[in-house]
Image 1: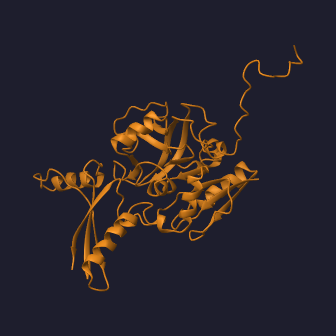
Image 2: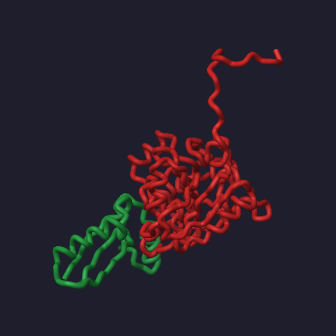
Image 3: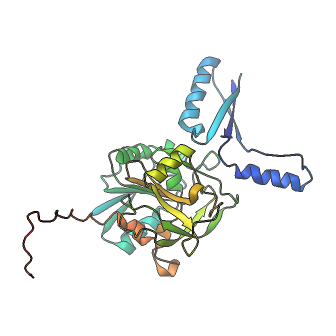
Length: 80
Length: 247
């Protein structure tokens, strides 16, 4: 099984990398880009085929290490 | 002799500087490194988490360091009331361990900042600031990419109300009035103190400012503060004091 986890900064956390990215794409002429946010995509390859069990383990990993709940939100995009 | 444990987490390159500052410059202290997978800290009187290159910045600074076994011992020491200081990456790790409020995010400039910073003493409510002079200005090196302090509005209000902002970035005159601040830190916060007052973190590096030949000695007062015993409480006036011999 392969899982994909999307991690983003919470809305109220300043995203300096996103700000600079938006400025630079505007510099290239893409002036219709009003905002950019930068996150992370983590892919995990799992043994076994127990999807519910894998979901629980992923949530546990997110709580313990993959995500900082003070500044980040996460979304499990797929487990298949 | 006062004992200071210096957990040497992966990537931390500042442990040797810190041990040198305590043992060779300040003196009269035993400062020793503790390996990342150690289960015990070796009965220290204080713990100082050094800075240096962060381990696992690609996830979050300090995010992977907390998977090391020694951080369990640091948490226990802190929760038992022991004095703990985190410098640079050490500060980021203490936030990740929930021993300090808030987090450190990318500098407003998105640049790695490697320069001298001016910080102003904002609170003396902690073992590492109790002997500093309130509002005094210290010049210390800073060296970080994730250096901007962030906390949610409620946490910020509590930090301010509880007098738990240890330092603020300022200019060389002590003015704290730039809206972006030194690096985008909210309220220009350069260091914070835990709810119970025994844990402190700061992004600047006092251990790199202990000799004039290296650019300054303002770091000594912070490192030394924890070593100085608290003064005996003064007797209340008129309470069983020996009459003065001098009249």
